[in-house]
Every structure is written in structure tokens, then in C-alpha cells.
Amino acid sequence: MSGFPVPVFPMPSSMRPTLSRARRCLLAAMLLCFAVLSLTPATSRADTILVMGDSLSAAYGIDPQAGWVSLLKQRLGNSHEVVNASISGETTSGGAARLPDILRQHHPDIVLLELGGNDGLRGLSPQQMQVNLGKMIERSQNAGARVLLIGIEVPPNYGPTYANAFRSVFSQLAKEYDLPLVPFLLEGVDLDTMLQQDGIHPTAEAQPIILDNVWSQLEPMLKATSDQA
Image (spheres, rainbow, N blue to C red):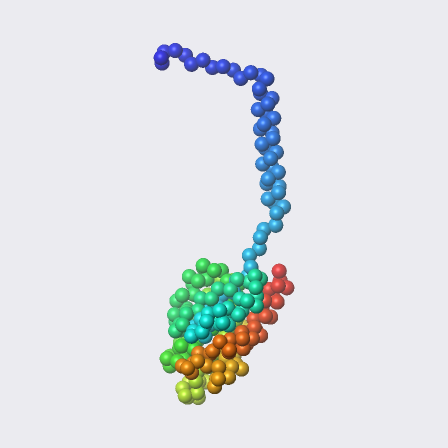
């Protein structure tokens, strides 16, 4: 069979204009699709708020939906995505180690930095705590996020020298990096009636007060973002 030539039949001239018209129609349809896509506005993502905290932000000992971070989500609705990366027992060194991966994963616009309480309870060096928090602030800013620094205090039985050194870390960092600051997360919380049995963690009743403390500094940041949009 291989010795026989394969016949080639020329396309009838009557079919050539039909194929040409088909090509033109296909090209026109493709151009129309490209035009429609170019005119369709891109869907803008909601700004992301990342909470890097410890048990005070992780709703330790209460219903997670009653915690102040969940209440923040409810207040913001769909206007912002809130990512709670808080872990009970977290220290500033642990947070500093975890932060780079979290920044790469979520690309936050605002970072709420609430760490240091466990450093204080363990009597760790305020100077090292300041270094760790400074690293977290710089990494957040380098990733394009604005930072809200949230302060905490140690119980008075740690002594005035340690308590004052601990407290001053937050104000010094806020001044150094020009950050908004919540001086004391638990401001206004009745420490006699609004703490759990451990005497450290706030109850569900305290969470709206905590949210209002954070909101007082967060709301201006959100308004600034809205004005820039």
C-alpha cells in the first residue's frame, strides 16, 4: 500500500469564504471578551487586621465568641477581615519567631500587637521584651502594615522597679516608632469582679470594655485608611 500516492483533494473555492468569515467572527468575539474584561472593575479585597496576642486576646477561659477579638469582628462586619493569631501563653520571643510566616500568609494592613504579659508574669527582662517587640514592629512595617501597640501591666506584687520598667517599654516603643498606643488593655476593667478565678484573665463581662479600649485607637486608623482609599 505504501507505493500508492495519497490523493490530495483541493478545497472547493465555495468553502473558502465561509471559513474566512468564521475566523473573523471568532476574532471579533475574542476582542469583545477582552474589552469587557478590561472594563470590569477589579474586586478589592477587604483590609486585613492581624491580632498578635496572648491569652488576653485568645479568649482564654471563656466562650471564644465572647472574646474581644470576636466582638471586633462583629463590629466591623464584612468591611475588614480579622485574623486572630493569638496563642495562650505566648511570649514576645515566641511571637517574634512566628510573625514572619504569618505576615507572608495573611499580608495584613494593620497589626494589633498585644504581647508582653507572659514575659512579665515570668519575670523576664523588660529590655529583651523591648527588643523582641521592636523586631515585630519593624517586620510588620516592612511588610507594609501599620501597627497598633497594646500595653499591659504586671501585678503590683512584682515591685515598683520592675513594674515601672515593664510599663515604660510600651511608651518608649510607641515614641520610637511613632505608633498609636493603648497604654493598658484592661483599663476600666474591675479587677475585683471581672477576673476569672485565676485572678489574671478577664471574664466575658469585661470583653466589651477591652474592645472599647482597643477601638479608641483602632478607629482613627481605620478612618485614615478609608480617607486614603
